Amino acid sequence: MAKKKRRSMLYIPGNNPAMIQQAGVYGCDAVLLDLEDAVALNQKDAARILVRSMLETVNFYDTEVCVRVNNLQTPFGLADLEEIVPMQPDNIRFPKTESVQDVKDFMKEVRRIEKEHGITDPKMTIHVMIETAKGVANVYEIAACEPRIDAITIGGQDLTADMGIVKTPDGAGIDYARKRIVMAGKANNLDVLDTVFADVNDDEGLKEETEYIKKLGFAGKALINPRQVDPVHEVFNPSENEIRKAYRVYSEFYKNTKAGIGVFAIDGKMIDAPVVQRAVTVLEYANIDIKDIEKSLD
Amino acid sequence: MTPKFKAQAGTFESSDIMVLIEPVAEGSGRQVDISSTVMLQFEEDLKTCINQVLDVMEIENVHLIAKDKGALTPTIKARVETAVKRSLGIQEGTL
Image (cartoon, rainbow over all chains, first blue to last red):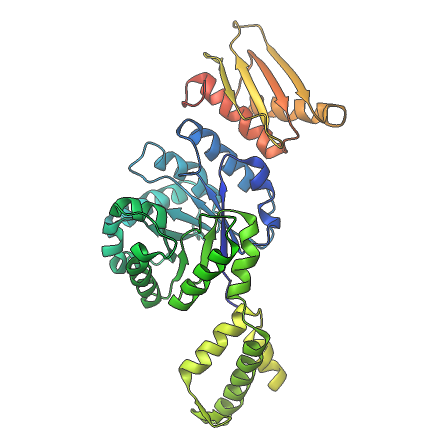
């Protein structure tokens, strides 16, 4: 089965029933039901009850569902976990993760709640959100500290605020953080998701930024409006030419491997393991299962 | 349990429902007043859904006013639960 794509993750305010009930039809790969920054302080209780109720009932089809809870240092974090963990959304997101101890504290509560509700084989994974300078400094240790973490995400708005700088369109202030977080994620085989692009009227700017973060190695980008879905997918989707080339590389690799040949050439260019790995990634983004290619060649 | 405070939850936005709760004296029973943009089609469903939540939360004496803008069942249940919890003083919110 092809790896699940995370090109787009749409933020949906946790106290907005109209948007939550439509979350499965926006066409994004994932939605994030937000109990944190998108919810007013005096509506935190209403949002967590609404999100829990929606998770019980609403069909999100094949859209991955993540819930961002409040940090445990706030009066809302633990109450959020008590409502949401029993629902076992696909993932839960820990905001403002700064240290291994933060992850341990969160996981202690998550595991306690799962045990109390008889959840013995939890499928819910963890996303850690890095949005402070301290978090960036500790990201390698954070990424490696908990096996249920399967994605890291950078929070650009909070990070620039923490650094005391202005977030500029060229992303200069968070460039080092982006690269460091990507490397920490890759070193631990995790997906890394980029921060939001705040100007919903600037499609060109969104595309430029998405092309840049794709080159850095991000798996996808957080979005704040459904109209941002298509421009981001256009950037992440491989071209027809790239798909044809990847298909040929993988086919030749499979045939040569069966014949006991490790390294081979296509059109005079050497094809080795890294080239094959890149081809597999392209095929995954094109929704082509390599098992189907193998079957067609057997 | 009997609500102690006036409380509300929800909004007047489309697909939402505004639920207001007023405390009443012990023994007064339930009074549920509903208005909805889909009253003709769903009045009974709305009443059933609201009463189910009140049953589960063991609320016998209450005056509940609901102004519905086409909310789905999970939204109705969530808003009633929130309003009741606020009225019981279990949690804080918009009062």
